[in-house]
Every structure is written in structure tokens, then in C-alpha cells.
Image (cartoon, rainbow, N blue to C red; front, side, top):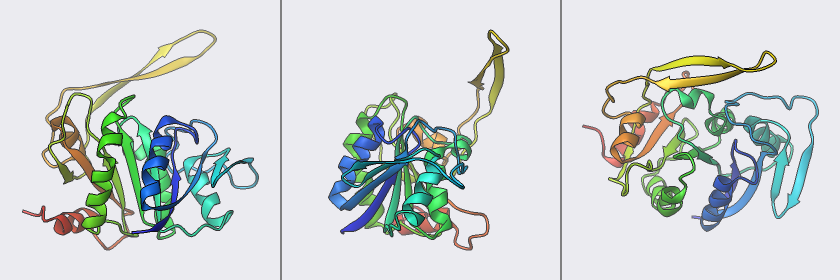
Length: 244
């Protein structure tokens, strides 16, 4: 299957994850890279490039935008007038599971894509642990394509194997989980504060992304806008034969 592919991320256009992603996606079609010029984790689907911002052209279909991941996607679609078959974001340095997906610029780029009925996948790996993502990437992409999981009604949020697991138990469709956390701030000098969080003990809910990552699965979570009529979770489970 040959596609026109737009890749982006929130860690910056020259980060390790997006270099792996660009190499891996060459197998599936023509790849264009348009990503934030600087590290923009936690940007969600925010936009700062409404009027004017600098865009850097690095050659060989590679651009960086001084803005957010959503800005990069918007510029690719409406500034460069690309018409990609799929938009792929990542590979993020750190999982995007549970409530973190709300803040994630990796996922936010895909939400921006979804606004314009573009099929999208967000990929994330355990922090500073890209080896499973590199090793299992083709297996996951082939799984997605073989089961026709791509849709313009929902995005796919993929989290690779955690560092605590040596071998994947398989790929499963999951729901979004939630884990409670304690947030606090450490006061520094000159009125500065450092934000910190500590996850609290809880029971993993079976079938969620948090449960899957903890137990050694590769997790694929469909995420959608609330007003979409197609239910991504049920649709993906039906396609892979996972419905009980």
C-alpha cells in the first residue's frame, strides 16, 4: 500500500523518535516531515501560529514550524497544501496513556488532523526506551492496515512495550484508563516553582491502555470527538475480532 504520509511530533523535528518514525514510514509511501522546531510536549491541540511564525525548510520534504504540533499539521495542510492519506505523530519519548493523552501534543497533532477528516496515528514509547518501538513498529503498522483500523472518525493512539517487559504479549484494542496522582509544587529561588506528581496506588482496569502497558501488551486506543457517531472502540474491536 503506497501512501502520501505526513509525520509530525511534539518532541521537535530532529528528535530521536521522529527520526525512527521517518525511517519506518518510508516503507509505506512518500514521507513529508512537518514538526515543531522546538520541544513542545504538553501542548495538546493548542495553536499559537495564528498570524505569523517562522518556518524552516531543511530540504528533502522536511520542515520545522516555530509553533505547536497542531500548528505544524495545520501549516502542512493549509500552508504547504499537502493532502496526505495519513498523518502519523511521534514516536513520543514517554507513554501517552490515561489522562496524559489530554495534554499530549503527540495526540493533539492527530486531533488537529481529525478536524479535517484525515486518518491519523499517534505513537509513543516508554521514556528513553525506543528499542521496542523500533523492533515492533512494522508489526503494529501491518496489524493496523490488515484490520482496516484507519478511519477519519477516530485517531489511533498506540503505546509500545514498557521497559519492564521484555517481550510483547500481543497487540490489543484498549479503552482510555485513569490513574490517580498527587500533584505538588516545590518552591525554588526568585519566585520559581517546580511542578511534580506522584502516582497513587490503584487497581488497573482490565481492557484499558494503562492495564495493557502494565501487563506487557502493545496498546491501540481509538480516540474521537464526542459528536462523532461512529464509536471507535467498538468498531476497532469488531474489526480485529476482539469483541466478547
